[in-house]
Length: 569
Image (cartoon, rainbow, N blue to C red; front, side, top):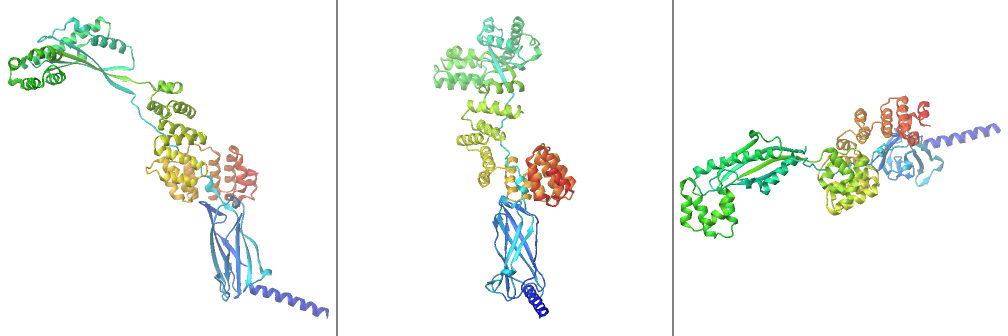
């Protein structure tokens, strides 16, 4: 009797087992990628559920619920061929697969939390609790490598070029008597000649002055015969040169006694000068002015101009008194180059007295002559106080504050600069403030208002592209080698290119550079030793990276390796 009861119990258990198998056999799951990967602000999940042959009863439906960190995803449903509902149908005899996808907003809890599934089994509307699917891990957390992007924008500075030398002239004039070319002593002591001598004395001891030429141009008044006026104007240039050289010798002004240093030019009758002086006269009536110009303008066709003018108008004496003496002259023009402040002089002035400089000089000096960032910041700070209404100075002061990490001060400067003048550089820089404050959408909107393109704007937009998951476009925007470009290349699967980029950047010994090299080693299958070596270098420069590496799903396959453990623990 006991034996019979035992067989009966076994039979009942077997029936239960077979009944359970008839309802739902064990399911299998696969997901790609594993671990999951963050793209943009979200994590995409794709899981394929495999049902074996004769694994799902025709009247059974299954609700599968995935969870990732703090997020519960949409419920997925599969069902037998005769079950009612909106799940994906699976044939009983041959089994099959069903693929489900979802996109969930990224949450920090997802980094180390596995993607897990649980499921409920239903026959009609009745839940078969005993057949419930147990919690099953299908993916090992989430890779969040895009968050390594350096969010600091490239600043745009106002720059100018300034002339480092000025082309100048100094002049003097010697007047002559009618028909004469002898230089009268009184002409050599006039104010303009005294000023010329004083200038030469100063110039010969000033290393910043380089005399390029000394030209003397002679003129004659247009009232005489032109055949005589032309040689007269030439003779006046020669006489003026002789007198000037004599003055130089007398005043111990050396270096200008060689006659070949002078350029002489006789211009003959000065008709243009005559018309100009005549137009200034307030004592000669306009009708007589017109007559004088008409008669004297006849040139060689009238060799008796003086007689004609006198006969036509009693105003000839007024010409002789007021106009002609000014035209009988030789003009001395000294052309020279005056060099401005040297590099060292500009730097010293910018550091000690920027308020005594022009704004363009400050912008030039700070941006092109001063290489130390602290000194640059000091100059712009002082200049902002001295020139509070110049948007260029305020922009650059803000850019320096930004690079020093003083974002509040930088924001204030940028806003003031924009209030004075709407400009793209300050807009770009203000977008950088939004970015470091975590306001990516605001930064993107501000950058979109800038229509011009530049390497800085392209770089800054590419930072946003990385965080949006658009890695290939970001690579193009990062034109020059940089950490962010290498990161985008890693995320796009261009590991060799990323390694090359990291060898070309300036801060190749930075902690995050070594950390990114460890990720490249892990992704390229270089082995635990290569990964651990790079992580040791990274951690030696930033100990916070020890904790990050220990949980980073980039290194999931090394986490049980002794070498890896030694590097991160």
